[in-house]
Amino acid sequence: MRKNDKLKNFTNYKMDSEVYKLRRKVINLIYELKNEGFQLPRIDVRIGENKNCNVLGTAKLHGNIIWITKKAVVKSENYLRNVVYHELLHTIYGCEHDETCPIMCSSLNKVISKNKCLQIFKNYYKKYNNIKQMEVA
Image (cartoon, rainbow, N blue to C red; front, side, top):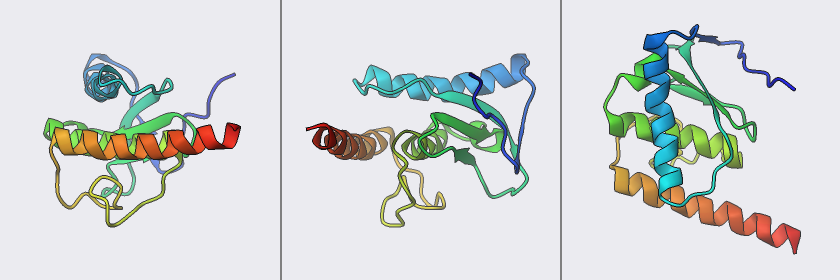
């Protein structure tokens, strides 16, 4: 069954060698988490542009699909990491925005380091995986 991979306000770029390189940067950050020991589902990645120029990425809550803008991908690796981890937390765990969390706030005000991003992601990972284990028991 094919996933709904279109969004009303987001235009997916057609895949070509340039878009593949942009997409690869996002996928590398997902693999960065997997290499750190996080067990993540398969995530579909789309690259394109959002009609709202302030949006850097979008995710389908609990849908395992993220849309990242070219604007976010061409920034620094730490900048992109902040955006990708944010969208992953939306799509994997259905996390809502939290203005007190540097990764999950609704706007990217301050780019944080790789280690800080990993620590925050780990905290969410533990929280949501513990909830799932408690529901099964």
